[in-house]
Image 1 (spheres, rainbow, N blue to C red):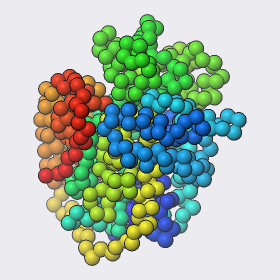
Image 2: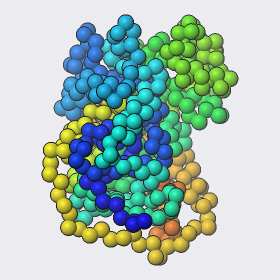
Image 3: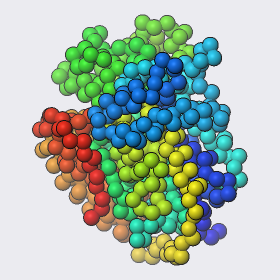
Length: 519
C-alpha cells in the first residue's frame, strides 16, 4: 500500500466538531477523517449535560448572549458569541435531521438549566446527549461515499511551508508506519488538553495534540491559562474520573460537607448554580480548610423513579460502584474538564495559517472568554463546524505545487526504555495539578515553568533519537501544551474567571487576550 494519501479536506479528530464538519462539506469533495482511537472515543461521546439554545418563547438571544459574556468575565468576543447564539436554534434542527431525538414533555423540549444560565435553555437527551449526537453523526457520515474514516491513526505534525498548510504526517497505530496525508484544506478537531492534569474528567485522548501541532506550525494560540475545572467528578478509586453532570445541580442537587452542612451560600448567592469557576474554587477551599479528600453532592431528597428516568447513565454507573444516588450523597471532587483557549480563529474557523482551520475545543473562537458557560461547548462544535464547512465549500480549493517530503526515520531507533515516557507523563500531570491548578501563585507558576521547560528539553532530545510511537507523540504534545498553559498563566497579571492568582487577586479593567506564537 502506498504511504501517500491525497484528499481535498483532511479532518483531524472525530468528535462532534469533526463529524459535523464532514457532513456539512460538499459531496463533491474527497474528505478524510482520522481518529487517534476508535471513532467514537473522545470527549464529545461522554458529554452528559446538553446543548444550549434559545428554544423557549420566554427566553431570548440577548439573555443568552449576556449570560455567556457574564460567565466569561467579559473577556469573550461579543460578535462571536452573538453569531453562535443566533445560530443555536438551527443547530438543534440540524442535529435532529441527523436523528438526534431530544428529550421532550408534551411535545415541547424538556429544557433544563445549568450554571450561568438565567433561563431554561439546555436541550438534552436524558443524561447522554453527547453519545446520542456522536452515534447519529457517525451514522450520517457513513452514508457519504466521499468521506473516508481512518481509525487508530495519530497525527504527528502539520506540514507547513510559508504559512501555508499542505497536510499532515500521521502514524498508523497498527502498521507503525508514518504516512503522508496531503490535503488542500486541513481542519483541526482534536479536542482539548485536560489530560495535562492529574485529575480530569476527560478520556485519554485529550492530550492537546492539535494545540501543540498548531503552535509548532506557527499558529496563534490564545487564552490557554483558562482551564475549566468541573466541580463534580465522582471521587471513587474505580470511577476513572466519571463526571457527575451539572444538570443534577440544575435540578436541585446540593453540595454538602461530610456532616451534611451546605456551604455554597458562603461563596455566591446563586449557590450550586454559580458558574463553574466559583463552585470549583469553593469546593477546593472547603477541602483545604477541613483537610477533606472530597465533598458530597446530595440528590437523595428527590423521587427515586424520577432520578432513574432523568439520569439513567449516572444512576447505573453509581450503582455499579455500590452507590445508590436516590438514598445517599455522592462523593465528588473538582477535575480538569475543558480548555477554554486554543488555536485562535475567526467565525469561519480560519487560523492565521492558510488552509488550516480549527473547530471545537481545540479552537479559541472567543465565545468562552475566561470561563465557559455550561452546554455552550457542544453548541460551539456544531455552529462553527457548519461555518467552517461553508467557508471551504464557497472558496475554490487551490492545487499546491509543493512536493511533500517522505517521513525520514533513518536516524532513529526503537526505544528500550519506555519507563522514561511513563515517568515524564506522570511528572507533567503532577506539576500541573500542584502548581497550575484551581488556585495559583507567582512562585508556584515560576517553579512549574522551570520544571516543564526542562521536561520539554528532555522530550525533544528523546524525540530526535527514538522511533515515533503514540505514547511519544502524546507526551511531546502534552509537554508542549503544558508549557503554553504555564506561560499564559504567568503573563496574565490579574485574576479573572478560571485563572485565580493569589498574588494578583483583583480583576483589571482591560479585556486583553493572551496570545502566544512560536518564536
